[in-house]
Image 1 (cartoon, one colour):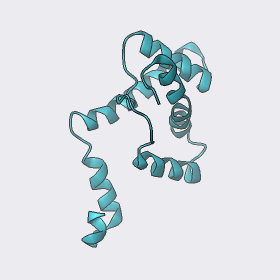
Image 2 (cartoon, rainbow, N blue to C red):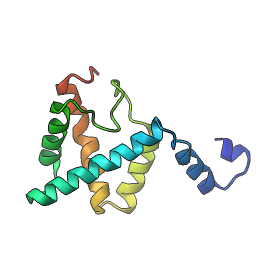
Image 3 (cartoon, helix red, strand yellow):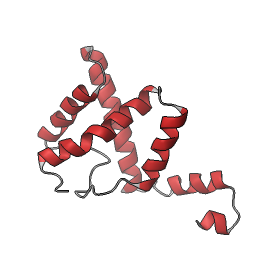
Image 4 (cartoon, one colour):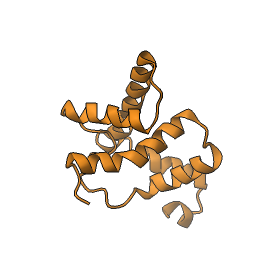
Length: 124
């Protein structure tokens, strides 16, 4: 909104908003999500497993059973999806639905709330 009021370039405003998350709390969470996804991809590649809802669910449970958190889902309340992700997801669905990384992220988005509810992490 500030970018619109200042008549700033919308792309620069968007980039500034994303870069504002570069601190050790929020920014680190973004990095940890990518590391978790890369670990998932590496493990499945080594084991010859397909990346799908079932294998992602299995990997998530391995993470939780090891007393680790699922990065990006650190808050116990998941009542509403972050609107920044909603916009990014809509873009991905429209412009890159077949991208491997987007498909992984979208599958995580679909299965993770159920996993965390079953685990007791959330009570939504």
